[in-house]
Length: 188
Image (tube, rainbow, N blue to C red; front, side, top):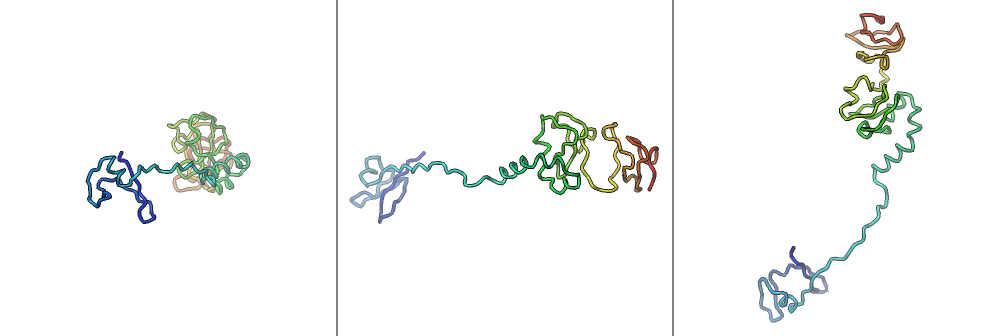
């Protein structure tokens, strides 16, 4: 790294690499030696040490994390409709990978809020949109699109409403795992 020199000229500090300098007699010297640079009044420049400055305020991410932690117990009590209104307060699915998640936990993934329907340890290959036995999308839609339940943990309750093949259906049995139109549903 090239050495930087300084000299006071006209009351101002001037910085230079001193590749070409004017000597006291007026002649110009290219690639001067250290002795010639010193003779011309140039000194090695040492930048001042500026101590690190403390952050005056926490960043946006730190504030959001603190609000999420502060409200975590309150968000557990929210209805699905209330939760959707403040979805950004819920942890992201990615932040829970390799951690245990419990039934009812809500996680943010791909712009949507998802609810855990089977306790498990979150894994990167089990994304909420593809691991239908582990997650269900939080929705307040009156007639959500029917999806095939994988078992009792995500079966439709008695009176549940769904849309399927262009029609609206209501479940007539509890723990309904059947496709509308086959058994356990009445077209509304």
